[in-house]
Length: 211
Image 1 (cartoon, helix red, strand yellow):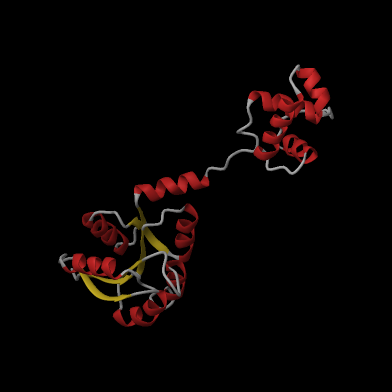
Image 2 (cartoon, helix red, strand yellow):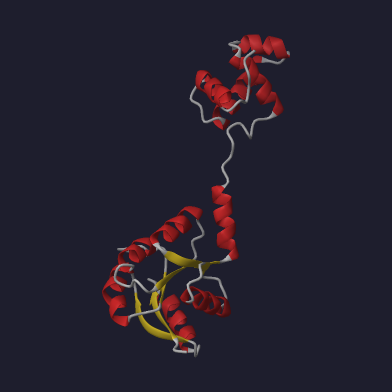
């Protein structure tokens, strides 16, 4: 089989040269060009006709996502692999939406990189385990009120009945400063600007019920 043709896009010369040296040491891979940023890659990569493009995520002039978006129409048969030190679920999703076939951290071993390149060239989508974990964590949405303590929920229920702070203090036999402290925490945890908004959020998400 012919070697997989690789084009490297990274604004750090040492990383770029290290990748090129690694690629040249693998008989199954062939380095066909490099660029220091997305704009330069857009000019050079189409002439190199790569099978796989390794793209850094954070670069000057044109970042990795913009570079992938711009290069895809010019290289319709190429696969794009994001190789980065930035682990952020939002950026991972942006890269995937732009057409990235894989996402690998720069601390990956040479063999891991070779395996990912080969898998991507075969049409497989590949993600480093850390990237998959970040995506899962990023998709997890905290339910409003999830962070409220038992006491805060108790206060919130009384707030929903229309009781003022002093009435709540009397009902629960606690001091006014304590009530105010709890109310401040409730507003912060529900991302509410005032008591009325906090009660509306609580009712909407069934944190309290009005009888």
